[in-house]
Amino acid sequence: MLTVDISKPLEGAAGPMDLRVALSIAEGSFTAIMGESGCGKTTLLRILAGLEEATGRIVVDGDFWLKDKNALPPQKRKIGFVFQDYALFENMTVRGNLLFVERDEKLADELLSLTGLTELADRRPSTLSGGQKQRVALARALMRRPRLLLLDEPLSALDPAMRSKLQHDILALHKRFGTTTLMVSHDPAEIYRLADRVIRLDHGRVTADGKPADVLLQAAGSQKFSFRGELLEVQKRDTIHVAIVAIGQQIVEVVLDASTAASLTVGETVTVAAKAFAPTVQKV
Amino acid sequence: MSGIDWTPFWLSFKLAGATTIILFGLALPVAWWLSRTNSRAKPLLEALVSLPIVLPPSVLGFYILWALAPNSPVGAFFEEHFDIKLVFSFTGLVVASCLYSFPFMVQPLQSGFESLNKNMLEAALLAGKTPLQTLLRVALPNIKPSLLTALIVTFAHTVGEFGVVLMVGGSIPGETKVASVAIYEFVEIMDYQNAHIYSAVMVALSFMVLLAVYTFNRYHRRQLGVY
View 1 (tube, each protein chain N blue to C red):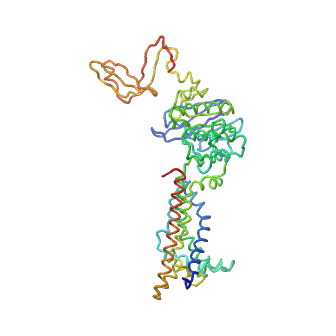
View 2 (view 1 turned 60 degrees about the horizontal axis):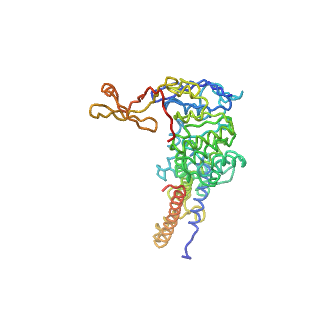
View 3 (view 1 turned 120 degrees about the vertical axis):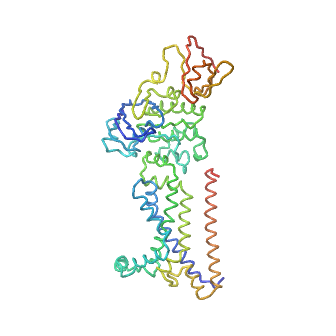
């Protein structure tokens, strides 16, 4: 059980703000943290890791990591941290990166095989692809048998195919080791697949907290298909207007009437919705 | 070439070697601290460290001479307790060279450390490593070109010293008469032939050292996949 009740003044994108978060995280759970950039997500992870100062308290199974201003140094917290930019030790091989953390050959071999890195064990990080590097970082983070695994947008620099492969790896490792995990992510599909709880941060405060299905499904139960997207262009074709909207990885066209077309500005976030009574699902 | 007295060269290289080894030990913590700190004292320390680059060697030499002379507190202390004479001796030259070459060791190390990925260093802390382990096993091995530059430039700069050496050491054969001082004396007594030979040897040695550094750096960058 992890109990957090912290505050820290931050210089946000929109001026100074306070990061104030009070949470309880269940042992072995997988929690996703989402929110606009600059809302304090990464800072929260760094405070948990002991890389940044804060006031308040962090208690893990009765052990204090932070009590008022007294912080346990990061070395003593037993944390696994995966950075967005991998942060591998460039002077060591893949296996060396794992063994530097803990001289446990057996665990290293198991982690390498679970992440499909056995063949690459003697390579240097600079010769690996982004996805391979992030798998090394993931395996390395688990070498200390951490009490808490923190993932800071681990997959955001990867292409969609590599993402889904790594999501699978993260899930497999979570099942195998049962490590309490906190992951910062922007990707609703990723959160849905991996997390059992999602927390939304907005300007340093928790504004939503619940099951991914409840927080993420935007139009639950209304028989309505509703998607958020970015308006790319409004075209006039003869007498009608057509909006081009990017939704996720797809681009769609929607016919508009003249007054709606006039009210929209390119670049805005828009909702595309339709009543759908019998939508079909087919294999691509 | 058999008539050449190699002692001044040997002295130059002995001085440079000793200075480089001592300075590495002294400059490493300073460079590491400077690269990591947010302290307000940082510009102050940086300015102090860089001072020898700007100051004329005669100014530095004068102060060192004044500070280390037997009638100064420092000079008296060393003479009384360790029986070490700090001026017009090889030991004094080493002390003076360490002050003079300090920025040439600190600056490349500091910029090397500053170019490291901060997350990589944090990953070492999170792996339970002490700051010292992080420095020796992660930071230093990842700045090899900067490390080599620091060592070689310090060495080369000490070999090339003249003003400070002359002021603090004088020109005692076999003790403080290094190559640069020897060349100066050859010119003064108009022995141009020996001045030519000594100078050419210095040019060749210096060029070879620098060539080795740049070759290594190129090799290292290629190894990392950076072209």
